[in-house]
Amino acid sequence: MLNNEMLRALQQLVGSDNLLTDPADCWVYGYDNSRRHALPWAVVFPITHEQVVALVQLANLHAVPLVAHGRGTATTGAAVPIQGGIVVSFERMTRIIMCDPVNRLMIVEPGVSNQLVQETAKQEGFFWAPDPSSAYFSSVGGNLACNAAGPRAVKYGTCRENTLGLRVVTGQGESLDTGVYTTKGVVGYDLTRLVIGSEGTLALITQATLKLLPLPAAKRTWQVTFSSLEAATQAIVNVMQQSLIPSALEFMDEAALRLIQTYSPGLVHAQARAVLLIEMEGAAGMMEEAAAQIEQACRVPHFLEIKMASTEAERLTLWKVRKALSPLLRHFGSQKINEDVVLPISRLPEFIERVYGLAQRHQLTIVNFGHAGNGNIHVNLLFDADKVQEQEAAQECLREIFALVLSLKGTLSGEHGVGLEKLPFINQELSPVALKLMSDIKRCFDPKGILNPGKYGSFSFESKP
Image (cartoon, rainbow, N blue to C red; front, side, top):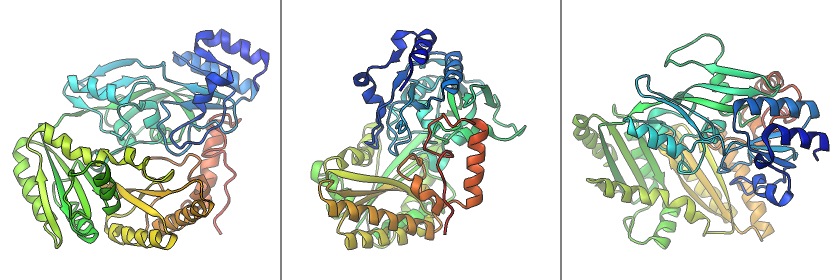
């Protein structure tokens, strides 16, 4: 717990209005969307970079853990303060400092929502590429912390590819500016990309320079339906071999479609066993060629139909099928494990088939959907949390899924991060040399280990057998 000296110093630093110490008030800041929880000793709401610098220096002096918190939409427990300490909530640092359309960039504070960034950029004819499903509510700081992506990553990349620079505070309380104001720059190590995705274990982000892209002149969206899983996965491979790269290529399997039909009848073909949602963006003159390529790539055996949206309203209707899935999963089973593994596209058919086999063997419902264009599949294991046998089956099935992913040359996370959920498994993917280097980097940024302890870099990694 915090001693009186520390409490007085916090009150002097940020003021009583920006400090919570009552456990009842602090409780909600111990959660993220993983449903894990740990009660922080206090919650601080900084409003300036200088306050964050002073806060980290104060925490160093008293050896108090600091855990950065955005809007709590992450699913891996990365923002859960498992060792107590102070949660640093950036929800009041919400300024858009500059929008510079000439240089195609925007400078923002970490508490700004992804949605506000998009709305502001759109007024100038631009957009920021990362578009996670939580974009309406999630903060830029949280997006950067786990290197969030979303459907558009297949064409435009993740936060790492769309952030020019950062202003951060290291674990020693030092102010650091990383990156450049330009779209090219190779002076020094790429500390910007290192901090992005580090889940608040290396530094606290107080400002970000985002790379903006011009809004496309034209957009086309298709929903393609198949009567077999094999047909859909073959179509994914075909589409990604075309010269025109889709800006989104989403996949939904039979279990996902059954769930949609239960709660929203009529949204998909009655005989559908798999659906692809494909979107293309670019010059208006290229759309006819894109349509021809898409139709040709998707006309495989067991293809059922293709629908193209002709209006924005129809486009939103097609997307409604995909976006309905995550909320609907809360109605199916009392608990779910939501993983975001990534496979080489050529291995997707084998992966999905073998996951079905695991579901049957463990007597579990598994729903698969996600960003198939870059092989990022959300594997959702659904089970009854009140039944010990189902809990144990789900955990064993998860271990087997992770082993399968790695055997197919995939990776355990594409955009959700590691947090607490995947920390026990990362030594199966990363070598002892890599894990040691991560720990060494953590010590360079945060010698006392006060930033998000118990997560990346501060974990006692074990070598692979």
